[in-house]
Length: 130
Image (cartoon, rainbow, N blue to C red):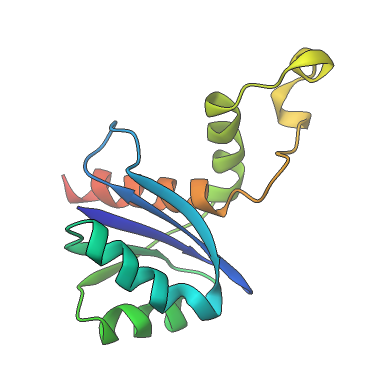
């Protein structure tokens, strides 16, 4: 099982995936300072054997926490994940009412989407690992 992580300045998104094209088993966003505790919770709930970390802001902090937990990890290019995460979010949560008439490229999600960026990082890793 793979944990994808999108580290940011103050928070990080995470996604647990089993394989490509499968729905995520867990999605979430935690403050950066709470990531290590959440990592332990996720390991207790899922058989995580690899972590894919977006190679960007605070990747070093997350890498150190993962290393401390004794898990292998890989840094993954995270270019364009935020833009693609927005598109993926609207696939899973289609706009309603008048918002459905607007071009999706003009819509902004009603919540942070770091978890969707983490999902895309995990999927990018899985595509490269094949």
